[in-house]
Image (cartoon, rainbow, N blue to C red; front, side):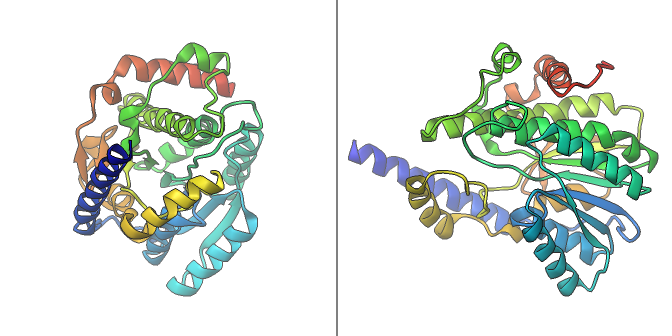
Length: 321
């Protein structure tokens, strides 16, 4: 058993170093002007979201940090303003684990802001437990919260005549599976203290991100709004801040040694936000600032449509499919 674990560790290390090398060579060369445009970044107070916000604010965008932690968000906004010189970075309360909070955020945003040009569904977590509405927290936050948020803001995006939706997924989608009956019965919670339960639920939620983007692009055909899913790389973030102590003891040394820094991990998000000419790739998946072919389960249109319908039902949205 020891030799098996060592071999698996060596393979993991080789894989992460390879991915790191690829991402180190990936730089965002986007050219879209951002001055006067408004951006929402969920989870923009830390990690990849914060690095993304820093870049976009530096380009002149009005950046809305949509976050649950008020203190961290205000600190992040002050830091971004100080570094970039921008006075157009604001914080708005958003808890993706609460439909009530998502609806309140959308209502407040639509009243306060006249335009929306870019929605970056960045926030994500690995944790056990349930959302306020009774869903597994990874499925509820990583997918359902963003699904509801996007739908509530879609009309404002369309009004601008060229908005984009960028949703952070992960290579982990490859190991995801969607049990619709379990979702409808709220049994596919992904709760528990064991690592495989965390990992399984996380993979399922990341597959949802990919399929959500796939079907969103289909619904957006004929409009000027486009959407993309992103694998940011294996990045040092606070993604696993809710896992147990022994899991952190295992994860954090590996993360410090091999994982990408958030600024590098933000490059593919920024590519999809800023790059000219990628509109024909709406609905596609990006990695290392380039289109990446999805596995069959990530491009199953029938499952994507079913996920959309079930998500509408779970969020209390009227179906317009």
